[in-house]
Length: 577
Image (cartoon, rainbow, N blue to C red; front, side):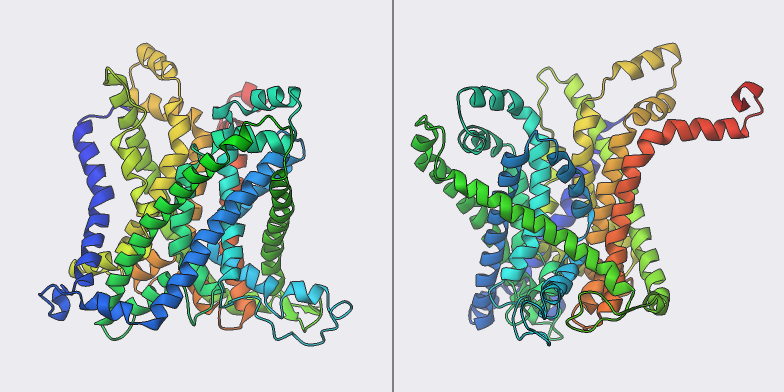
C-alpha cells in the first residue's frame, strides 16, 4: 500500500482510538466526585461514594459480580485446557474444532435465550425426562435460571468463553512446538495428561495470558447476558449500574459514576490477584512438575474436565437447536418433549418487526465492519513500513497496545460518560453514533484477526509486479489483497459477529430510536413470549453463522466463480468451449 504521511495517519488513528475512551472516562470520573455541570454540580465531593457504599444492593451485586467474574473464567480455562490435552492431534478432535466457529459467531444474548429455553423449570431438559422419570406433570418450582447465586450466569459464561479460549489455545500450539514435545515425553513414558500438566500447560499459559484477561474483564462487566439469565434482585454490579444510570432521577448518575469507577478498580485488582495466584501456584507445584513421576493424582482434574467440557459443548448446541423449534411451535404443552402442532404464523406475525430490526442490524454491522477492515489494513501497513525502515525492528507498535484498550475497559465505565459528549455534540440517537461506537469494538477484533496473515505476507510478489509495471495501488488490490482473501473474509466475519452482539453501545448511542435484533431480544427475554423471542434470537444467531460460512466457502471458490462469470460474458470461442 503506497501510503504517504504515515506519521500523521498514525497520530490520527491513535487519537481515534484513545480520544473517545479518554473523553468517556473523564465523563464518568468527574461525576463520580460530584462534578457534573449539567446538574448544576460544580464542586468536588465524596458524597456519591458515600451514597453508593450505603446501598445494601451494592454489596450483594458486588458479591455476584465476583462469583461470576472469577468463577466463569476459571471454569472456562480448566475445561478448555482439559479438552485440548485430551484431544490434541487426535483425528476426531478436528470435528470439535469445526464446531467451535458457530459457537464463537453466535452472540451472547442468543446463547442466553437458548439456555433459558433449555434449563428453565419448564425447559426442554426437564421435558425430556418428564413424566416417565421425574413424574412431573407440571413444571417444578425450581430455580434453575436467574438463581440468587449467579450459577446460571457462570454456566452461560462458560458456554460462551470456553470455546473462545480453546480456539486461542489451538492457534498458539504451533509456537511451543507441541508435536515434538509430546513425542519426546511419550517416549520417556509420560502419560498424555501428565505431560500436558507438567510440560505443555506451563509453556502455553504465558502465550494466552492476554486472552484470559479479556475473558475476565468481560465476565466482570457483562450486561446483556446478565439481563437475560441473571436474577434481577439483586443483579450483578454492571446491571445495577446500568439501572442507576437509566434512573429518572438524574442525581443517580453521580452514584452510578462512582460505581463505574469502582468496577474498573475491581477489574484491576482482580487481574492483579489472578496473576499473583498464578505465580503462587507455579511456585507451589514446581516440585510436583519436576519429580519425574509418570502419572499423578492431579491428572484426574484434567480427566473430569474433559467430561464437563463435553457436556458444556453439548448444552450449547442443544440450546441453539431450541431456537428454531420455538419459532415454528404452535402448541407445546408441558411435559411434551416436542411441539404437538407446528405453524409458520409466529414468523409471519413478527415479520414486519423482524424486517425492521434485521435491516437496522445488518446496516450497522456491515458498515462498521467495512470501516474497521479499511482501518486495520492501514494500521497494519503502517506497522509493516515502520518495521522495514527501523534499524532495530520491534515486534510491537503503538497500535498493538492501544487496540486492547476498548476490550479490557468495562463498557459501563466510559460509555455513559461518552453519552454525555454525544448529547453535547447533538449526535445522540443517530445511526452514525451507533456505528461509531460499534467501530470501537469491531476494530480490535478485525485488526487482531488480520495481523498475523498480513505481516507474514511475502512482499516479493508485490515488488516483482511493480518492477514489471508500476501500478502500486492496482497491484496492492489485485495481488496482495487477492492473496490475503481468506484472512480478509475471516476478519470480516469476526467483526460482523462482534457488531451483531453489541447491546450496550447500541442502546446508549441510539437511545432506543434504532433497535436491533440484540436489543429487542434482550428486552423481550423476560416477557414470556418464547415464540417471538425465539424468532429474534434465531435471526441474531443465524446471520453470523451464515457470514462465517461464506468466509470459509467463498475464498476457495472465488477464482473458479470469477473465471466462470468472465467466460459467460466473453465472446471468446475458446473460453465458451
